[in-house]
Length: 422
Image (cartoon, rainbow, N blue to C red):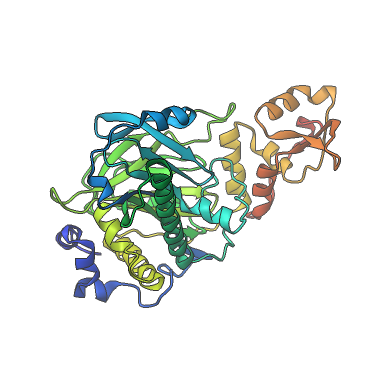
């Protein structure tokens, strides 16, 4: 465990400074892999959401007039966007399944991109999103993609973004750009481990005497009070209330962000720890312009970038004393969560695990209407796409979750007579 003085010293240093320092070289991972804890079925480093700007070194210096003709031609894609703090203007915006871009129609006419690299890889490799109630922004646990695949995907998308920008400028303004550049502004870097539990992490924080509050939902997060924690992290609150799904509020009320600042021009790093889905814990580092520029310097090859990325993640896990132990979830854990989230008794949730077809009867009308309203039961559809009258099945998402885990000890005793038809 490092002292606050050591942490402050190396947090204030530039990324390349501490990547090359003797201190870092002595602590970094010894092998070119993603293993840090060495006790999990899965440890992987990902690249999640990335924000960057595409521009031409010469073209961006010109003070171009607002292009009203282009705006009127694509008026359905014109949005009002904040381009600087306190300044909004009309931009041309387009979206896809995994990305979006905004083109300024005046001034330097630069283009702002956002890409979700995880969704991009899902589309690229035809990976079916995981069945999960809250969020599908992660790859299946058994996915074989590595950090090298993420680096290559980001490189490819950045190249595509430059080509898109060059084609648009040539088509609409007749200028052939020669020096198109990419400037990263924000990159989310998740470190995922399986099986692990945010509950377990919260207990360890409590044992260390760190003050925090816990909101245990599908995407359960640890949220800390405004304190100077022992590990030197200054912790801020971020409120993010979202609409509920039916009668079951499965989204988190609060996300916590650890913001590390060091001087006016120092590095800024955000750390978030949360439960991505059952058993999958994500420790997410968010880096900004200078660190992102240095870490993802595409003049280097993929292996060099991936190696520094792995070492960067391992270094910060150790620097901030982030410890995660293996935590094997059981069927009991899943049932307890679903019962709480869906506001239904535990024994009813247990019965859903082995329920093939729910037959509608007068005696189960009330429970049937309640479960269908919450999306727990859905109508049975045959191979011809025809709904079967009076027959329902358990929502496949919930059924798959229940079948992923084994019971811990004896199954609960279920009074089936309480729920006719189950």
